Length: 120
Image (cartoon, rainbow, N blue to C red):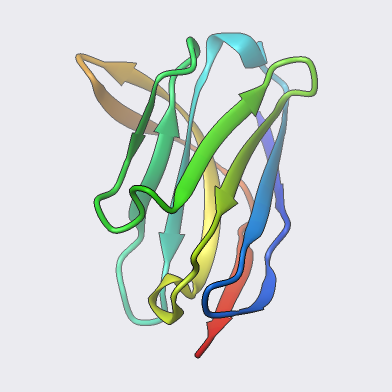
């Protein structure tokens, strides 16, 4: 499985960005996907996940501001980020995984990451 993340950049606080994750090498529509982020000096954390059926779940820190979606025809998962804050600054990674009993379990397949920098 290959995952290619893109869409990061520099944005002012309050602004928006849309990240994309193009997947190949697996049956896209059968997979769950997750977006994670890692800020400097911090552990990688889960941001949002989406099931094969389109169910979503978000970290409390991004609820109401971020939206994960998928386009099975394009084999792409998106993360729409709005009302960005400086604390959202991180490298964002996409992942393919599975959901069991409502919990997302990441695989070892990660995209290369895309840097999001939010200035105050």
